Amino acid sequence: MGTDTGKAAAAADAAAAERRREQRGWYVYDWACSVYSTSVLTVFLGPYLTEIAKAAADPEGYVHPLGIPVRAGSFFAYAVSASVLVSVFVMPPTAAAADRTGRKKPLLAVAAYLGAAATAGMFFLDGDRYLLGGLLLVVANASLAVSMVLYNSYLPQIAPPEERDAVSSRGWAFGYASGALVLVANLVLFLAHATFGVSESTAVRICLASAGVWWGAFTLVPLKRLRDRRAAPAEGVPRGGLRQLAATVRDMRRRPHTLAFLLAYLVYNDGVQTVISQASVYGSEELGLSQSTLIVAVLLVQLLAVAGALTMGRLARVHGAKRVVLGSLVAWTATIGAGYFLPSKAPGWFFALAAAIGLVLGGTQALSRSLFSHLVPRGKEAEYFSAYEISDRGMAWLGPLIFGLTYQLTGSYRDAIVSLVAFFALGFVLLARVPVRRAVRDAGNPVPEKI
Image (tube, rainbow, N blue to C red):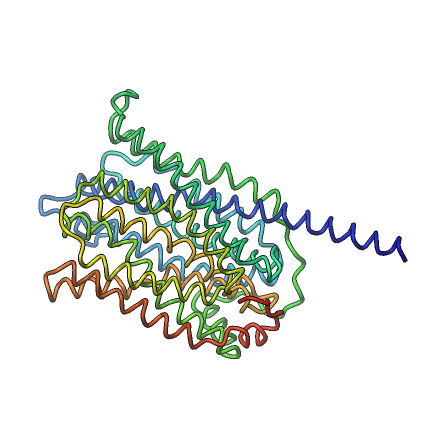
């Protein structure tokens, strides 16, 4: 009897050690790919690609991709939109294939290295190569979206219910820390490019390409440590993008509380993404702040998001993820409301706003991911997370539309920014109405003590 008990304990210890090893490898993918989101999308690529498009424009300021007249200043935004459309078509069938075959790791490798290669290829963006820039952006963005579906779908497999909030929070923290670290190095090179003997455009191209190299190099760690699970037998084959997405949504309708959570997430995450994308516009146009001030604010958000994600992960262990996310939505509402009253040309107050955003940003995202992971039926992780990722990346259009329409009607960016409070308030109401424990049971999963 004692021998059997000892063997069981040893087996449990070995399984726990293997699980922790896999979790540490999982964290590193966030460390690898988040540099692309921070340095490439948030800071460098938009202004640089716009300048390249302007260099290629005709006397009226238009470029002509595929013969379509496009204002050079709009090319970057259209390229981002095109990448979202590609993602919507590619994510669902890829996710379904991952669930049916159980071979997530090879698909993750393809997506990650395709995105990393496209990002590294941005080194060759110079002169008037705006079409190359648009193509590389579409490939990199779509590849990141696909890889994040596969990456997120590992969470229910590598973390038992009681560990999931903490594991998800650490993943987000790794990503924000990585983004801040590389962005500091990039800014040193960019601001002191003459000291390093390179032009400003060459410095930007090095910053862009280095994100791809970083992404590819650190992806080796999760590919070594994560393991595939044998899939349960399933009928059928993956369908085309929209057909597969429709099939996933139909399956979710059998679990209406999971679908209700996804709707709540879609609403409040739209507010989060709009704040992230429009805060710099608010800072520059309404508050009259310099580019250097805005970049420092981005760094502050990245750094404090690390602490915010880890702190909110600890709070979730005590109070449950749903309550903590609801609390974060109250904090978002208060923060955006306070942003309406910020004085112009006062960087200190803008930094305070950035600090408040950073503290709630990482935790809101991390705990939303872990909460959703409890609502996913076993064997459909990637398929359900493709719908989650589409909500995250592909559906965040209403917030910018409301922001733009409010500014157009009022002529005030202050009114535009405060209009986003509606997304957090409505998201709070929708999430509060979701019976999370019942949703977990409906998905066939064990209900954690705290959720």
